[in-house]
Amino acid sequence: MVLGSLAVVIFLLNRIIIQSGDSGTYTSATGNTTFDETTIDRIKQLKTSKEQSAPLDLSKGRTNPFVE
Figure 1 (cartoon, rainbow, N blue to C red):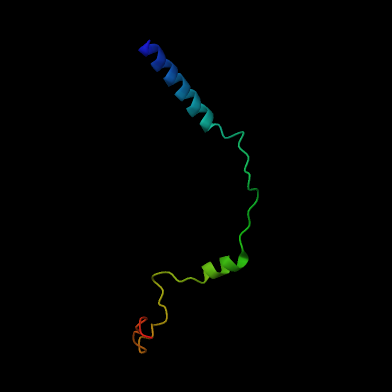
Figure 2 (figure 1 turned 30 degrees about the vertical axis):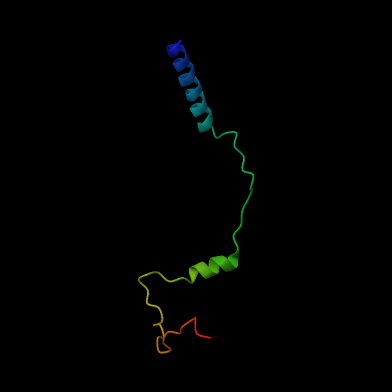
């Protein structure tokens, strides 16, 4: 009985695996997606870690946020 139920479980698992690999019946619910052009332009303006950026201005010093 244990061997028979083990065989049934293996058969069902194999069938689930085979059905999950079949992507012929899948249709996307989102359709065509377009990206915002302004966001793409902002991403293109980002610098890589190898590019030099403007030096930070540390002459102002730190301010204490707890001072009234």
